[in-house]
Amino acid sequence: MIPLSRYLGRLFRAEPHGSDRLALRAAPAVVCKPEPALKGEELFRSFGTGDTRSYALKGVSADFRPGELNLLMGPSGSGKSTLLAVLSGLLRPDAGAVGALGRSVWQMGEDEMERFRLRHCSYIFQGYNLFPALTAREQLEIVLKWGEGCSAREARDRADRVLGQLGLSRKAHLRPAEMSGGEKQRVAIGRALVKNPALVFADEPTSALDWENGQQVINLLTETARERGAMVLVVTHDPRLTSYADRVFELADGQLESEAAPAASGSGLPREYEHLPLAGHGPRVRLYNPDH
Figure 1 (tube, rainbow, N blue to C red):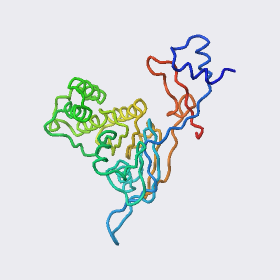
Figure 2 (tube, helix red, strand yellow):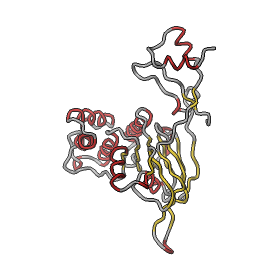
Figure 3 (cartoon, helix red, strand yellow):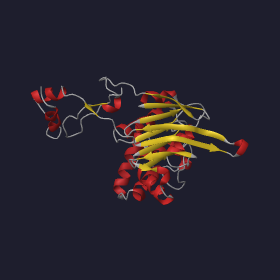
Figure 4 (cartoon, rainbow, N blue to C red):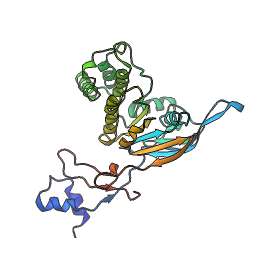
């Protein structure tokens, strides 16, 4: 029997051949469960005062791991958008705690919170919030130039690549007044994802789109999670998106009603624990979560 250390040592060497390749295929799985990128604990949020007070969140706890696409679903008024706002640092809870990337979100000062959101978070709202005077390409370029200090050439290349993924290459020169509602929504989504955020929060990102364009958006969100390692959290009413998700959280009357486990991949392993080889490197160790 070949020791596990022999398999691990080969991960950092050249692509194996012959018997080495066969040995690697027989390698045992390595147990690994990633730490949450985002976590909410016993979250409460109410609106109104006195007799008119109503609770949108009633003790919700949930965690979300990096590299996963998560859906928040439930009927209107169930607390989905409120939970998204609380977890994303946009709405302070009445009680409870939110942890993000190892930081306690609601213990940050205002300036610290703003820097954290700028560096790590991207938001996709139902309103487009585009700059009226800027073209579609410029909407994305400004994020990269001012947020990341990219050169004009790099910003243009990255902006054009994302616009192409969203089917907007021929619309890059248009301003918001010259675009349809669906086109403006896709530009807003591209602007959120072009900076490679660690945390992505999306409120009904496909609501203004037909299914063909909606698929382009969900494919980009899926790529952002699984290929870039981001945590993606999406509020949606659209049941067609569930097949793309790693986990689905159902809310009802301000409480978490259920959480669906990720679907199994073709290899029999949970999808988020099956990693493909990186370009120019040897095979990766298969990661298996014993909880599934």
